[in-house]
Length: 262
Image (cartoon, rainbow, N blue to C red; front, side):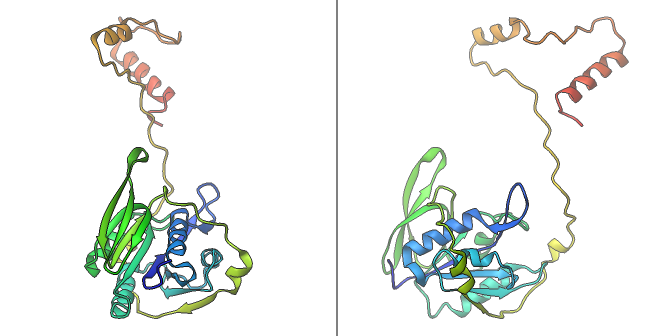
């Protein structure tokens, strides 16, 4: 436990990938779990958005007595109000760590919030961490989650912002009753409409085109084998004397069959 460090976990409203229902975001839950490991119930749980969203109590049910909400409208930009919050509390918490998920599961889900927040506060940012190994008076040792299961320990000065990777410890189960008893604190730091988002048109994502299978051969022998191998399927045909229109139609039918085009 690090009693002299102020740790803040930024949380958002997640979306279940199948049902689309609101839930505790997976990576944000890991950020809360890491914060609880560092300072236990002294962790500050912070959300910029709808203060009446019941999903927020799932985070508090992980072991916290309360959470803080900076009220925002549907189309407001969360970055300015978060910057105002941290600047207003900077003089009291110079030894501060801010934890976020890599990206949200709803809204823009661009993963840019921790970077924009770090830029405006002038703090260093450490992306995709798996753990915080040590924290002392001026710096912390952070374990980075690298590709293929690799890890690297880096040192970063306080205060800093870190995005928590899916390689971090899984979040504990949320206690429903404790979440209901948690105290909600709202702080008004104003709001600002996100002009860019107001011009967007949101539509359901379309399936990506399917790529044709391409044989990748490293040696000349492999390339010869691939060129002379007998086709597995027997449904193809060789077009030699057909007209251009018939050949084009055959190619078009193949692309439809392989679902390259729809």
